[in-house]
Length: 264
Ligand code: PAF
Image (tube, rainbow, N blue to C red; front, side, top):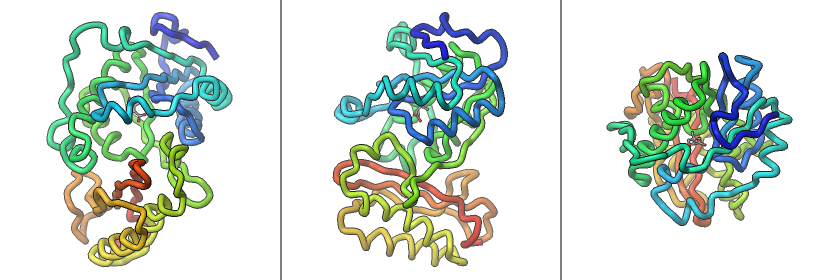
């Protein structure tokens, strides 16, 4: 695996699959890299902690950084190029932000104003420098991948399912900071309970009930949406998805699950 600091050092000169990350890689990222290898023998992984998407500077400062481990993981998962750009390469001059529009202002966007503008701006910039044919994103950040798919671009956006620990906790770089795992697991338990309900009202109420049973969990939102437009789902909608965000000991966690089995 080639390690590049500037995009000009990347070995890619034809089609490639791209996995943009902010580092602190885990098995979820490994699954994205493996998926990328299904599309191309050239897989570029970037690690760039994008300041534009952190509305909270403390969160940016505390974002985990594990460079040695990341190199090992990217190589063993099948990356051919690991790109570690610096801020000057990504944002060489004044930054013109891409607006995420109305979908950027709801759910994640309520507590994180400007977050998705920052995500779209960096993804657009990364795409411009790598020029991939495909880019792989995890469905754990479902609002993020939905917005990236709606962004004007020639890159084919591929979604990859959420990877979970054996107990159900969705893998996230933030998990290393979670001290009360049982409290964090309430999110998965609520999603499972909702997915097993036949009626959408039942799904909403069981989700709220499970979440409120955990005193150390502070809810931001829990909803069942129509995943095509993020509106509150109706019983008759085909593609329903439960989405949850909240806090455990000062750590913000999000997760989601398609309502395939229940609430149909
Ligand atoms: O999901 C992430 O890790 C980031 O939001 C992304 C897509 C790499 C943009 O910085």
